[in-house]
Image (tube, rainbow, N blue to C red; front, side, top):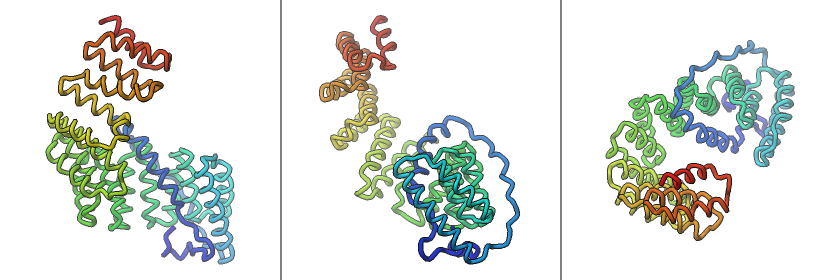
Length: 360
């Protein structure tokens, strides 16, 4: 809700606002659909919803009643998110409230949040578009509807909303990151770079901007520039963001391999914390690096050590078998397959591994 809009006065007792957990929902959808958006072309956005004309503002007593009802529904929505409960009944109650107050932008905004949490993205866009038709100068709502459009594959529509959010709040660098990511997915590389450079001028420690610049340069085949930017992201990373820093280190290791520097990549991976080295992503990167160095048996040995430490780890058994086969260690691979059959006889890799043992 726009606090400067006189048609939506705040409730001094309990003002309605965007629930903070919605940010988690947005992040989940952006990450969940990232691969989809990369591999599939964007779809053109559907028609904008038909918005009824605005009526006269309700009297103050009704405004207070509306705000109280929205605050109550917002609290219940927060509890539903925290406990992963169905929000369908809350949406039904909110629809009844909207029927009484059809010109309430906060009501449509709350409905959009609930629909996004429920994964009903087309309806999410419709609800947020209603809110923006009533009160168009809500940067946070433009960002929300932009994210919903991204997840639907409507990248051009997402760019429009992210641009509007950045126009309304030019100092909010998160709008620039969302916009640049959408431009990147549309292969509008120059626009994305310009957006990110402007964001960095606002905040020189914006590690996410450097990381996205690295992705853009890597996509363009400019590995040296990509390495430079991921180094800047690592340097700008706050000390308390350890998990994200590991992701950046993995990205740097991958770029080193692309630059035909597998030994440097392996050294970087081996410097990661011990617990990080047990993650599937790091194990896979280490195995691929050993393979580049012409030593697939070392990849198998890394997975074998994980399996020895965790005898029920079916993924480690399958990978150990795969790399032992590539290294020509047929008997070791056979033992790994037997272990995998014992741990998980329905593992999807088993048919391929058994066939490979027969062929060898």
